[in-house]
Figure 1 (cartoon, rainbow, N blue to C red):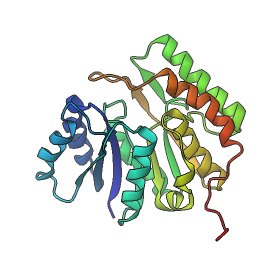
Figure 2 (cartoon, rainbow, N blue to C red; figure 1 turned 30 degrees about the vertical axis):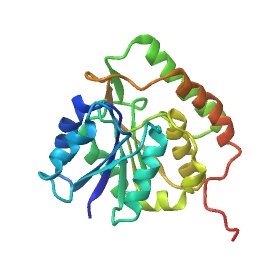
Figure 3 (cartoon, rainbow, N blue to C red; figure 1 turned 90 degrees about the vertical axis):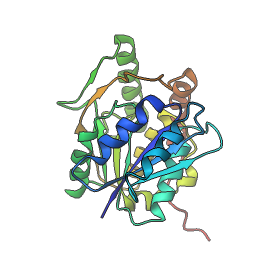
Figure 4 (cartoon, rainbow, N blue to C red; figure 1 turned 135 degrees about the horizontal axis):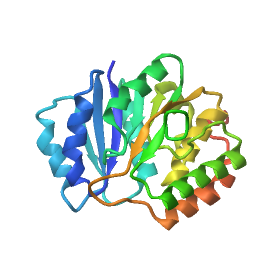
Length: 241
């Protein structure tokens, strides 16, 4: 049964062809869904030009505008849930996440985990080509999240993840309203709150070499305030009619 790798994009023309080829060259049966936010640099056209080489394995959804990472993943989850995928991956387009690690995350879920997190902050995990101020900010955000939510995840803002289908079916995706890091935290917290087993798989996270980062102060602010909202919210489906 194939697994679905969801890759959100906005102006990733320099990276998208290489990342697609790298994912589809992995030994497991991966399919790729590119969620493009109408990139003005022609990212979507690069994907279209590749689709004939990977019939049935490379898919593209183009949205009307730049709507954010969180909504892109949720739309991708819903697309995949309407099909026969058992495992769903979140992955960046810029090679910050090593495509070779996809099989390790998949193996963790096949061995019993419900959510496998590619973690920078467990033993043998790490960062490459990051500035010291960015490392300190990321570490502080992780500590802050753990202190507020009491969720036993060392890297709660990680964006390289494998979900089993049953996790996404159990989470009420309509209740996930965040866009950036807060979205990543909310998805993990929802799964944890619903009793699913989360595990962390060590990865080396490498800073992008091409293109521009989408990080902003608004995304950081959303995460800082969002964790307090998460504590008050139930993310499963309501039993009410």
